[in-house]
Image (spheres, rainbow, N blue to C red):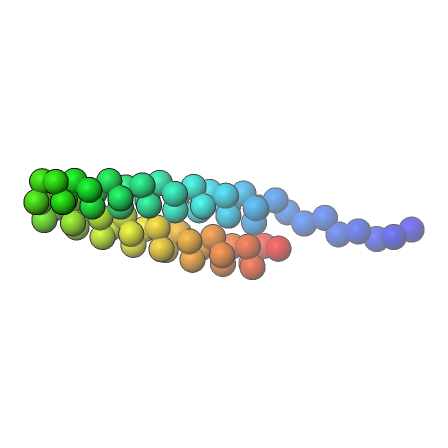
Length: 70
């Protein structure tokens, strides 16, 4: 009989979760940048920067989770 190892789905689930966070943060970044351009508001630039930071951190975590759990 062949032995098989069945891994956990935790890595896949967390990767999908962080991927979804990346997509939402990217949309928030684009929206805030557009509103900053149309309204000329510095607050929207800060919000855009926060959205970009969240997207980059979540993308890094998604890659790390894949390597940790698989």
